[in-house]
Image (cartoon, rainbow, N blue to C red; front, side, top):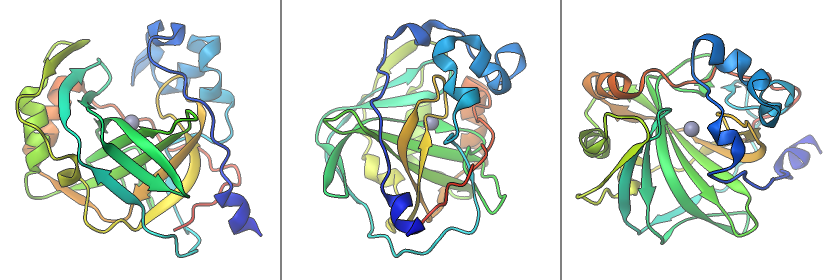
Amino acid sequence: MQQIAVLLLALVTFAGDGSAEDKVHWAYSGEHGPEHWGDLSEAFAACKEGKSQSPIDIVDPIDVELAPIALSYRGSTTAVVNNGHTLQTDVGRDNTLEIDGKTFDLLQFHFHSPSEHRIDGESFPLEAHFVHRNERGELAVVAILFRLGDRNRAMATIVAAAPEKAETSKPLDENIASLEIVPENKAHYRYSGSLTTPPCTEGVLWLVLESIGSVSREQVANFVRIIGEDARGPQPLNGRRVVH
Ligand SMILES: [Zn+2]
């Protein structure tokens, strides 16, 4: 059955931090923008040749009654990093995701504005990515989309602590309850995709929450003032199906 095939996601090992490809300059516009990523380095070939790239526009998902994901974020947040591409919050241990009988540890979470994923063609002002890895090196990312509305308390703490200068990091004085960012309802869309930044490595399990979070216009503006817009556009499905 097609649904079953979709669920049997092949996951690959994450190309970790500090590898050579991290040194190649890439950006979200101009000569080093997304349409050129695949040509900037051989290590980025998947960005143009990959057939299971992320993000995507989620249209007509197949209803297979997925079990909700189990997040247990009990650990601390330690620092906010401005890596020149996004604001990333580093975390301590004891933050886990359980899915398919596997345990993944939260590595970090970060933001994109506007959103990278779309739902029925609709783009959102902000998207959070909670990046997890299991002991086999497989990656699973929980994505949360945000609409304009009430201010998001956790986002306020992150932006207030954010270093303005790229490639710098600041310790977080106030611990952010990471779960505060995550909506209560864990119904989600699921598909097999890739990192949305170079090297665009495939085999990433994507879990996009159906519940939409809230963020204020000012918070989005503050994020964009520090980082700029940092969203890759939707990629072709190439026969992939999204389930939920
Ligand atoms: Zn991301």
